[in-house]
Length: 282
Image (cartoon, rainbow, N blue to C red; front, side):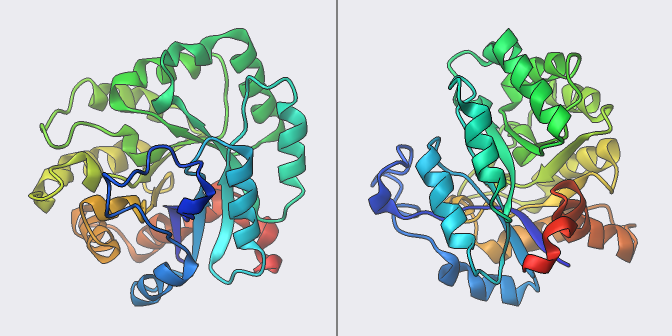
């Protein structure tokens, strides 16, 4: 099964996407399954993971509702407020839905990312670890030191979104390179080969710019812990869905076997999100 491990759907009139404004005309409209289907068919992608795009319970409920009866949505990664004393109850309610597969922690948007080292966050991460709940970590490269520290305290099943948003436009590799190497030492941590085109020059990128980043991630995490994600429609700020798919195909190591490539384009996401448990639902 070929899976896009990271994309979004939204409806602007819902009014909880504060970051999507008219100043971003490429994104300031509705994006739903009908808009993506032809691209999935062209690139032979069977299913997708829809990831939350707003930090609200209502938005997670919205994308879960979209997954009902959907032929292409394999799973939904939602959002909960860890600072809400009822977060476990919220999470358990979501977990009753057959296509709810995990949560995303938006470290990127935190005024002080070190909050995730506070006792109540560590307790929450320990709970996710105990329940074996997949966790997406949305984090920027300048925040990686706190993730390195977090992983000294917990052994969560987690995936780093968008290869941690390194400064591709500037060609900066360190300290991102060293910190991702440290993070990759934890066998429960995966990495999404996604969200890269928007970290480059939006209108003037070349595929060669991405090679050192992609190859480093594959070398450190291994072919069994990395996964393709389009980050559609956010990628439209810089590239089409087809461009993003082709870019990863062209920048991956050239000596991959067919089985390894199948893992990156589906099998690893299937295993990380435990989608086989729900395969009868699709």
